[in-house]
Image: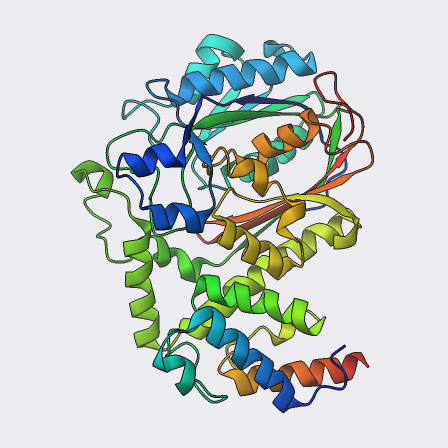
Length: 350
Length: 91
């Protein structure tokens, strides 16, 4: 989707204290070999602090940065990937109660680790739909420190999960960054990859089943090899990834060589390097170095890393940033953001 | 760099890379140009991405999007054939 009329006026971030990988190894939550191969140094751990409370703090920061008042926000989309609080209740209402008030459409969205991207896409459309609408707040937050989850090994060597929240304030009025494109691709034949070997009913969360993506991936691999569809699926997966990013670049009217920095999910070093390598982008010019210190933050990786790039002066006016990644679905997302000016909270250009 | 490479040379480099990165023990010796990569469990999600990245770096050309097919990645021979044809067309 080509975008020119929507801007980022604030990015709020809340990250709790970091716990080192060595500490997790000492506690027996992760093998030393796995820790070494994944490349993470630490992960952010929120302890007893709830995801909605972190989201509130990030949202407050985003509004404060932008100068937009809570009553000026027309839409709140709250993205998450893990359990937020009591069943039958939604975390978006917590932010309405304590920040935005009632005159706003507030919806929880569950679109995996691409949830913030989807929130941004939906937010753009919502703002365009009515002339008087001016601002949309897209929030992501998760605390993985619960039963049914070992944040240090949620499945094979793919990632280590970190806790935290992010909030992106989209406005029609110019902000410090401009959205040039946001694109989505989906390969739903692969949806089974993230559930294989488990029953759809009763849902694992109601029976206390521990999340283990590796067990599901192995079950899926067995199935597609037996069916003879494995090669086609593996290759199409990569094709979807490339096509989505190519479309985002084309819609932004730039080429990969124009991209200053790339941000993908904070997955393990090997996975991130291979993913970006397929796109022809070196890991060294991504935000993996920063991400490896906080862990994979569910839906918040991109917003938190973009905040980091701006706050540390690693990007400046005129720079293009590629945000990209894939998540269960399988959905693929790519967006191009252009930095227009340095906000007051930014660091000096590096 | 790759325009003058023969299919045998391309296949040799691919075999060397796959042996070193993805295989161990007897499989390293047994891998040849016609080994079915998926059935041998050489290619999984990560390894496929690693192989596509390697091709881009080693041969200086990305795999054309229309060539990202199961038939292309069936074995080393089919990948080599695609690469040589792509490099020849690129001139």
